[in-house]
Image 1 (cartoon, rainbow, N blue to C red):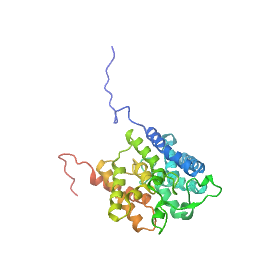
Image 2: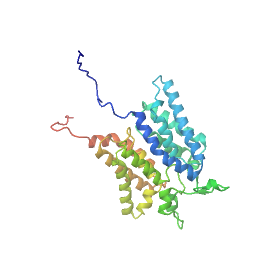
Image 3: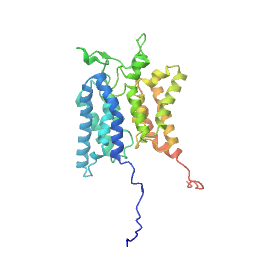
Length: 314
């Protein structure tokens, strides 16, 4: 006769919940279309740059955990995702040693020094990109035309947002923006590939669409109000990359649906303000970083109130 036992354990009690490595694997799969598009548009150097970012992120995480005498966390694939997203935010012409510096900033300074996965206050890849933009502005703004690797000379180009601010410039068509055959970062130009990856993550319930839709929707509406071409604005720059893959980061964005909507709207507002009035033609990275800092306050203001509970007296 078997003996029944009451087993008490802390939550979660669902044994089918996704582990961190499974979530990260889904993100990697979702980013593969953008990586393939980047290799087709900018050549195999895009693959080399991505490999350097991923390998250096994994190595820095391993060494950092060893030096701090903490458990090795490279198996959760979060360092791979950080390296992949960092590469997506870099121009394909960037010297590889600068990419290694970006990986160091993302993993060691932003992630591990704050306690590791889930403890960082900002998205590591975004912070690393901004540090590189400030430290190496010339290298971080050296763009080439799509398919320039096919010809003998790699012709320098400008991003669609730079062209939009230039008088008498020939702007790319909506189709070119959607397919990504323009100048820009390795993984941000092809809106089609990024949209496919975002839909995949949403279908697998890895991300909520609250932040991406409010980000893209607010930028579209505000661009229309400001007199800018709204479709051109959302298809240019890193809007789709930021909305689906960086504004949905579990550790640095709000956990409530209302909070995510506020977060996305804030990103849209700041992005438009920087694009219209700032010295940088692009504002996605800065907007997400600023909203990362505000995430704790957004969560406090949008948290669910317990029915019948009273606020503690101050």
